[in-house]
Amino acid sequence: MKKVTHTNDGTNTIIELRVRDLDVGAVAEIKTELESAIGKAPRLILDLEEVEFMDSSGAGLLVWLWRRLRASESELVICGLSQQVRVVLDSLNFSRLFTIVEDCEQGAGTDPIEGGRDSR
Image 1 (cartoon, helix red, strand yellow):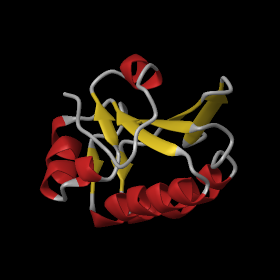
Image 2 (spheres, rainbow, N blue to C red; image 1 turned 120 degrees about the horizontal axis):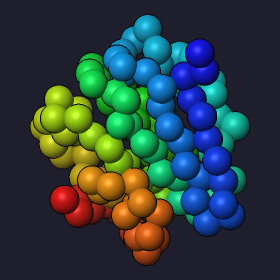
Image 3 (cartoon, helix red, strand yellow; image 1 turned 135 degrees about the horizontal axis):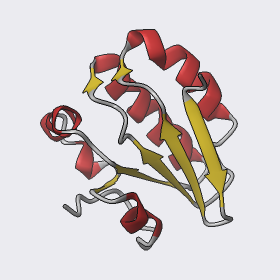
């Protein structure tokens, strides 16, 4: 089964991670698959609805993705967080880097912004 699916509507690239655990075992393959989606639209929406667990390598993947998008002048929006993933992102203060929204449709409708915000 493919771990990453993505669509593009011109304004948004929507990426769905199809993994339960965003950990060291999944990150390398996911990173390779994400490469092709970077810079294709002004906003990348990362849907983590299926992710139930994230460790430090998963958090590192988000920082890597944010840096790559920033270099291509694209925005990162993250949506569909489980409680565990929310706790990890909050503890790392990641809402300062990128936009975090509850609903992925809400993420597609956000205005591009500088930095990040948490719109729970």
